[in-house]
Every structure is written in structure tokens, then in C-alpha cells.
Image (tube, rainbow, N blue to C red; front, side, top):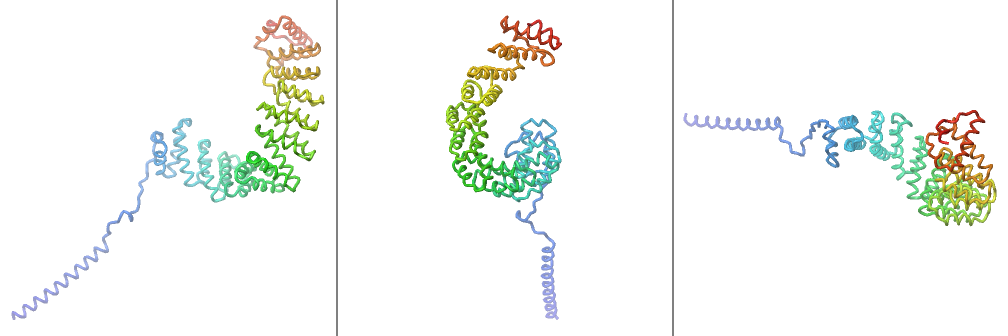
Length: 474
């Protein structure tokens, strides 16, 4: 009986132990299935609590990296709100403008197409947004698609679109200049295409750029001519001989003629290259082409001389062998300058028509009365001196003090009479209403009497009333 009892206890104990083990396994399994283990930092999801939109007064205290760091954490809606808040204040405040530009740059980098549409549609200050607009357009150039720029509200009247197209073209010109030209022409910007792409391409490979623009003669002649002019304006500074050689090598006469025009215009408008232009002109063998170019660049050569007073330019012109070409150049040069040199040039002209034209131009461009008088004094012909004084008076008649000096510088009785009548006309209504009559005090008594007689005679003949102030002064 006692043995039986011990066996029963052993069985009960074994069963109890087994059940306890089963329970522990079940319990551990249950905890494993229903308990989330702690996450490592690498596995934890980042939950960003939205930042409150900062006040402008807070942002203007920041600068540089600190300002960018503060703005970068804001979402696009908040950045737009910051920009709008800034527009409510003084847009001449450099700190406020800096905040706006920084916020715009961030928006432009995040979504360039949306930014461009928002800027135009939001009627925001485009001048402040210019840099960000250029950033957006440069990013879009990477996709080689201009469509999002062309769809900016306002179309061709949009200032933002114009800025964006220019920046887009400049960026694309560095990697695909032909596509840049094509897309900008399609966008209605042929002038920008010629200038922006031509400048960029000429800096890397002017011959290739010139070849491409020349190839457009049948497709877009305006872009062809403008593009070649842009290319040559840079090329002549880097290697004028190479530019001239390219022109000479063109088999197509039309392209060669346009190349010559671009070459000589680019040389002559630069005062430092005027001598090179004259040298190339003298070496041209084609008489008709040389004569044509002489007329085209003569005014620019005159401007170069006026700006530099480089006597060698005048000497090169004087050395032109063919009289007609030399006189054409001299007459155009004289038209743009005045003084003793203009007088010297005009005296070299054999034809009266050329001399008269040159004299009139010199009087128009005279910077002051003394320069005009110096040109006149250098003339040997009485007819030239009379014509020049008449033109000088015409240019200075609104200044009674100067006009009176021209009148009394006249040398011939009939000339004096005509100038006095013109002077009287300028002093009487309706042409003249003199208020400052201090010039009268500078006249000699005899001169004052001449002016008074001219004014009274002219008023009487034309039934005009002499203003009391003028009558009293005279």
C-alpha cells in the first residue's frame, strides 16, 4: 500500500512538471507574438512635427547659412507664406529682400516648374525673383524641355517668362547650342537665341558657331545675320586673322558678304580695333566690296577717332588710295567730330556736297560753342563758313546767349541780316517766350541796338507784339 502511494505521487509529480513546462512554453510563445520588441534607432520612423511659419521679424535677424537652415525645414506652403509676408513691408529693405530671395531659391530648386507659374500668377516682384527664376530655368534646361516655361501665365508678355527663356537658353547653349537656338526661336525669341547662344558658343568654338548660323540662311535669315554678328564680335578679339580667313573661305557669296559685314562691323565699333579694320579694308582686292564696306564703317571709324583722338586712325584714312573711298570715309568721320581736326578733314574734301554734309554733321556733334567755332575757322571757303554758322545757329537757337554769339560772329552783311532775323523769330511769340534776359547785358551797345531793330522790324512785319520784358531789356 505504501509502495503504491509512492508510485502515485511520482506520477502526479511527473505530470505536474510536464504541464508546468507546457505552460511556460505557451506563455513564452504568447509574449513573443504579442509583445513589440524595442526598435533600434535605425528602424525607427522619422516623424517630423511641422514647424510654425516664422515671423519676418525673426528671419531678418538671420543671415547666410543660418537663414537657409531656418528656411529649409519649412514646407513649400510655408515658404510661400514667408514670401507673401515679406511683400507686406518695405521692399527696399535689404534684409527683407534677402529673406525673400533665399525662400524663392529654395522653392525654385524643389519644383522649378511650379515655382515659375506661382511667381507669375502670384504677381510677386519679378526683379527680386530674378535669380530664383534663373535657377529654376537652369534646372529645367537639364531636361531639355522648354514647355513648362512657355506655359507660364501671361505668355510673351510675362517678364518672368522672358527671364526664364534667357536663362534656359544660356544653360542649354553650353551643352546643346543647336537645340537651344531651335527652342528659343520656337519660343518667339530669335534675338535672344542669336545673342545668348552666339556668345556662349563663340567662346568655345567660334568657327563651329559661325558655320551653324551660316547654315540658317534659308530657314531664318535674321537669326543667321544676328548670330554671325554676335560670333564675330567675340571672335575678332580672340583671333581676327582666323575670323577673316573663315570669311574668305566661304564658297557661298551671300554668306561671304554677310561674313564681311559682321567682320568689319565688329572691328570698327571697337575703338581699339579701328586700325585693324582700316588695315583689312586697304587689303581688300574686290573694288565694289571695298567701297561698300568703306561707307558702312566710316561713321564707326569717326566715332573711334572721337573717343581716342588717335592720330594714326586719321593718318590711315588719309592714306586710302582711291579718292572717292577716302572722301567718303573722311566726310563720315567729320560728321561725327568737331573742332580743328574736323576742319582739317573737311578741307580735304573736294566736292561741295560732301563738305556741306560733313560741316552740318560737325555742327550737330559740336560739344560746345567753341568746338563749333574752331571747325568754322578752319574752313577756307566763305560759302562753307556761312553754311556752317547757319547750322550751328540752328542747333543753338534755344540758348539766346549762344545764339547771340553766333549772330555777331558772322562775317558778311547779308549773313548777319539773315541770322538777326532768325534770332528775332526765336525771341518773339509763338516761337519764343524769353524769361532769362541776362544775355542782353553782355551785348555791346551797338549789338543791342541791332537786336532791338531786328526784333521791332520782325514784329511789325508779322503783326506781333514784343513782350514788355524783352522790350525793356533791349
